[in-house]
Image 1 (cartoon, helix red, strand yellow):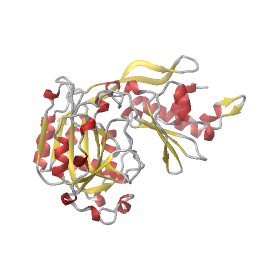
Image 2: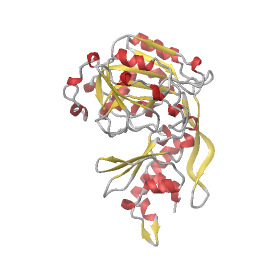
Image 3: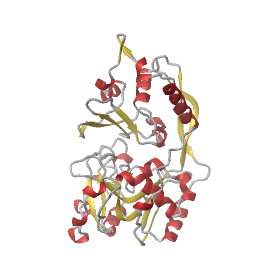
Length: 382
């Protein structure tokens, strides 16, 4: 099924399937969630392709969503998402206010636990990213995603979920191969979780379901990100797609029993950079003062970071209103380090009047990358 043939009625469930009157978006903004949505009502979003920022809302029951997830999809003609895989429809576990685009800051709540098992880890290549100004190697190593030593299989995760007794669906993903298993699992929640609590809630769910032994294969940043896209079932060889599903209980996550938010585990080079920058701060050094134009410090408040990225050959999307500023999805400058060299609008730039622009990439190896890293990539280290 092509992405442009996704029937409208499969996304907007019939009113008889569930009563949305008890869903209150205002109850899902923070930890004091207030009255919960009607048990069994799923709210999520479906996007046409990777560059589609305004998805269609889904409201309905498990059986209605299962009907969508059971189909096999093909890329939309012309690859509007950038690549064939990115040009297929994608599921997002979060739901949004009317008129708001996809993004962590816009997400209200989450009704699905989506787990991506990509069985990969970053490995240094032995090369370093060059300093754009001097051409000499910087202190940041180039990495490539490699297969972990003991890949997690779909069969063992499915077996554990059956023992846990929850309703779920699973399928192998676009880049899955016999030598490198990759698959996606969707567990249906009894009630939505506020987006601000999702990282802690997803950690509770993984442990509660007995999936901790399989964490080595999980893409944890994707698990923690309520705005992440999960492409629906498709493959260059559709006949090879493997699927599993089971009826069972809807998973109920107790918001008053969530674990504390964990500090991210750092790669050795990341820890070294964090330590170096902390030492700079303790010495009173300010990295931004080293950047000057005609002898005067750069005015970072007025810096158009989107224009800078575009001038350096980075693809940028259309800017949209965000709070009292703008948000722009951009291609990550370090996309070659993403899984399968996947390029795409995996990063965002936010401009807010009176403040410095910010940069954030959703990929695990770039979770600490910010404005300073983009400036050093574009202008080098003085």
